[in-house]
Image (tube, rainbow, N blue to C red):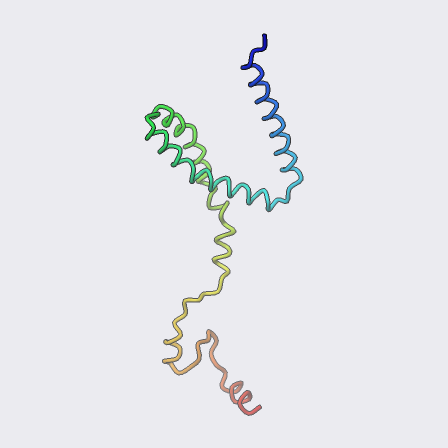
Length: 131
């Protein structure tokens, strides 16, 4: 007689093994930028889904399971939270290198000169007008 539980667990084990090999092959052959992007989206998914799963467990009356899930996931979130600033630092660099677009142009015009950061050289202006 065939025990279907053994067949189910064996199938699950083979499936997880094949999946682990495929993920390992992808990591070894992937572009490093793709791996970083996958890590960011996984982290974002974890941050978004964790409170939803906890809320669902508490609302469905499975508070014990919710507490066990929180005890399992919170150390990972706390440890990962220390590295989030480093993980999302390229976004800060993009914002830091962006030109400032919040200039007060009216203040520069009121002082009688164009909205520029460098002072105007009168000799250069005279040469440009006469040319």
